[in-house]
Length: 222
Image 1 (cartoon, one colour):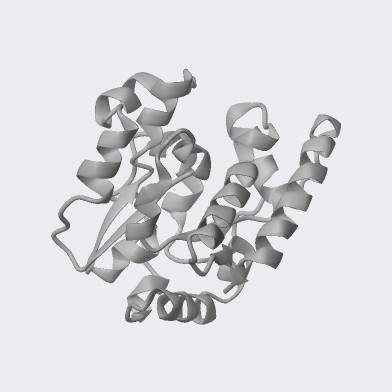
Image 2 (tube, rainbow, N blue to C red; image 1 turned 90 degrees about the horizontal axis):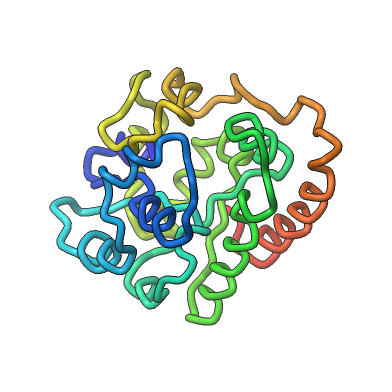
């Protein structure tokens, strides 16, 4: 998300379906009141008015969590270029567990990401998959390939940004983005995957590994 904001030619939105998802399914979050006040609570309105609405810049980039699209008409995918950003399971599970005190398979978005990939294939799209660890290891390699897949020009401006909060941040940034706000680019300075996995999360991890493998094997891994 910060890479696209750094381009200068992109209108960037941070999880615009988040409030609608929480409202629709009764999801609780520590910042729920702020979230519901900050965003449109009707997912179909978000799709029509924002996702498919007029854009003042050449590119509109929207970061979504796949589970937030649950229950929506996915016809919008015919009008958007869609890519799946996925993290290796252990680090993702530990990160979510640290922030929220729990983590289910559904929380990770892996099942919904697999469903979205299958929808892309059904609609004749080329399912692009970017693995976070690949991106962190070689952003100067992955980002040009991604831009080529998306038929947009690559710029080295995507590789770095100033530390601190960004205008595109959602109202939940204070809860999730502390490490990201300390960053100035893609780096491995803060990783959680080296910590041991709690025993109660082992079954979650095993299922997520299978789903991760489906994504990376069936999708076009950049």
